[in-house]
Image 1 (spheres, rainbow, N blue to C red):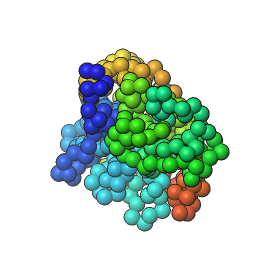
Image 2: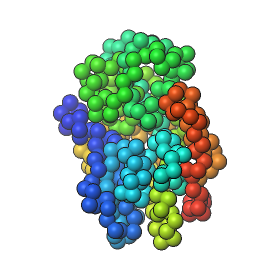
Image 3: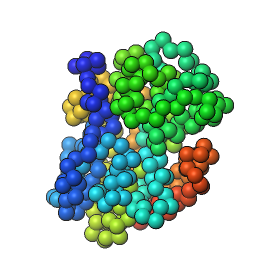
Image 4: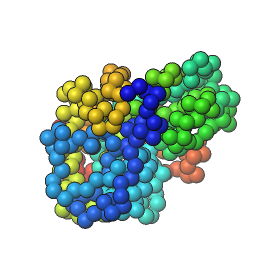
Amino acid sequence: MHASSLSRRGLLMAGAGGTLAACGKAQSSAPLRLATYRGNADSFFAAAGAPDPPGFSHAQFASGVQIAEAINARAIDLGGMSEIPPIFLAGAPSNLVRLVAVLQGDVNNQVVLTPRGSGVRTLADLKGKTVGYVRATTSHYILLRLLKEAGLAWSDIKPAALSPQDGLAAFQRGGLDAWVIYGVIVQQARAAGAQVLTTGLNRLSGNYVVAASSEALADPARRRAIGDYLRRYRKVLAWINADDERWAKARAAATGVPVDYYRREARERSARPALLPVSAAAIASQQAVADAFTEAGVLSHKVDVSPLWDARLNDVLKV
């Protein structure tokens, strides 16, 4: 299938993880209710020889923000996201999100795209331009970092906060001079002629997180089940890292996205994925991101992220 024949919805579901499954499934009485992204590692446990124990239920989500909100709403127990969505919940008395592990991953698939023939050649060229981004995500944070690097203020650009789907539509019709975006949708845009101005390398930590409900962690049986999930997640990552071609083909089969998109993403990645325990370095990394959002006025006050973290499952992830 050629890139131009793929629907925006199909690519976005593959890159960002699909849509929320039926509420009844998310509210199952299973030992753990898991959030997944279509085409990402958490969809391939069975293929890697680490299937869920009986009774686990799954719901597909389109973003880490949605997963964090679903944990807070008691709709799910566990899911992955970047380090950024939990920052916006930190300090709230009702916050149930706790971070139990660090998933280090690729940052070269987080990019700034410009259209074919664009006059934007450097970061400084963003001045006065319309720049699309996704609010409260790595996309938002990268844009803040890039503007600071270029000596530009937020007021020096025309920021356009858009969902990935709306951003793709705007980019395709010429409504954006630059687009800060992530995932396999980057490869679709490149196939259609978009250029990569720069990536998240040396701007993002590469720290994604596994988040669990504080209520699930307080239940010994569910806490053990979360520990089992983390052990099996490591097996999945070993399976992924052992064979890039197998991984690309598996993702393509699951999503309908051309396998060459995943091959190129693998060739260009900044690092292979690894699941690590909670650490002082990971907490400090997230704190620096939170401080950047505060400095930019995105957050109204300084946020202490340390209460978000729960190291009780670190023993499970000891190397």
